[in-house]
Image (cartoon, rainbow, N blue to C red; front, side, top):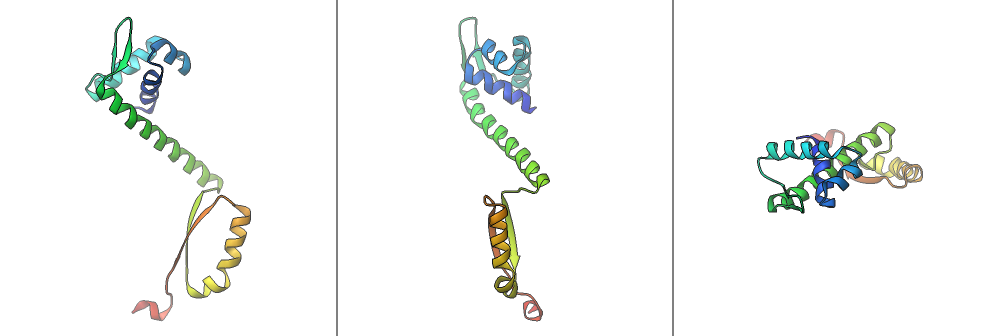
Amino acid sequence: MELRQLTVFLAIAEELHFGRAAEHLHLAQSSVSERLRQLEREVGVRLIARNSHRVRLTPAGETFRDEARRVLDQAEHAMRAARQTAAGTMDAISIGFNFAAGQLVLPKTLARLHAEYPRLKTTLWERLTGPSSLR
C-alpha cells in the first residue's frame, strides 16, 4: 500500500465524486480510478460503492477513511520531525542532569534555550552520579 493510494482514496471520500477528486489531485480521472482499484484489490474489500449516478463509502470504506487519515497524519508528522531534527529545531528535548548541574548549569542553560527556541518543550530528569550512584 502506498501513501499516494491513501491520498487518492481520501480525496474520493471527501468529494464523493471521481472527477472533482481527480481535479483536486491534478490527476486524470482514469488514474484516480485505477489507484482506487489497486487499493481495493490490496485491501481485499470494496471501499467505495459507485455507479453512474452516485459515489458513496461502504461501511468498510468509512472505517478505512478514519484509519487512512491517521496514517497520513502520522506520515506528515514523521516528515516534519525529520526536517526539524535536520534543521536543529526539534520541538522537544529531554535533559538529564545531576544535582550539581541542576544548581550551577541548568538554570542558565534553560533560560538560553527558552530565549533561542521559545517553542521547545523540555523534559527534565535528575539522576545521581559519582560513587554513591553505583550502590
